[in-house]
Length: 232
Image (cartoon, rainbow, N blue to C red; front, side):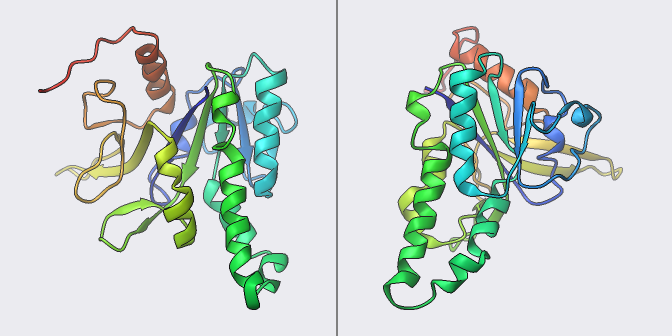
């Protein structure tokens, strides 16, 4: 079964920059547009080789399936900006035109089905060594907490993408008394931010913004290389 990771946060919190130390020889990035990747190794991701550009939500599943079946050297697929795919669908002329009668409601069911099918419905059939990393924006929820931007109550209540993941990181920008900035990843929830990781894998509440190190630790944990300690 593939491991799905969500890294969520506000724009500018370092989500894309967290990819800087990933190995381009083992990674494939799915991007919604051709915008350059904001780190030096970004130039090593070539369209048609280890980077795919598409704005269609329904294309994601096929790309991941191709990696799973035909690219054994790739063990990480990154969906660079999942939020963009939501926006692209909801603002598409076809979606906007379905605005009356039962079709107005059905379009949201179809949207939820597309999100579920994109990378959650087949995860149990994909390779055990394959990781799917989703970068996504956040929104303020009705209870005042900050979490996954759902773009509709149906997605949040029925699909619930967070529920399919063992690992949800939340980007945080820290500023100390000397105005030094640190980009961090929160590993577990608090009263404000949504986040979660498997008990014992990340003992620190916040870690440095480096997805390569985070995934390496998860792989080590899953293989039994990290002894988990639990507070009773």
